[in-house]
Image (cartoon, rainbow, N blue to C red; front, top):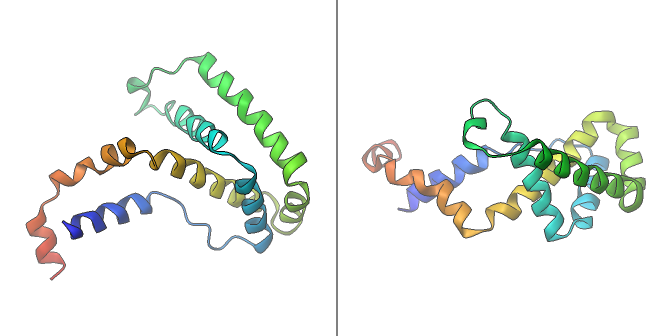
Length: 147
């Protein structure tokens, strides 16, 4: 069972991008941004990410997202990002852009996205749903491969 849990954890972790190579300024911006968000805002960012992903042709048939849902969420995120960059973290944003340009901003907001997704992953039902594939793993193959 421990091997299956390890495999599941590695699989889920591999789905998240790594921002270890971000500049110090981008990392400081990411810290400021994430520190400036409350739990509800992180959940709403995760909702925005989900709604955006729901437009993908593979996922769209399973989603019941209206244009109004998208517009409302985009309006919310637009106001949130405006606040974050102009009120909460303007010094860090300016420094990150000066050093790393658009890439620094992408790195910083990538980390914000990870934090937002962690907010959703913390709910047990999500972990259970994403980990449910483990009942279809072939334990014998894992035992042989990792002996």
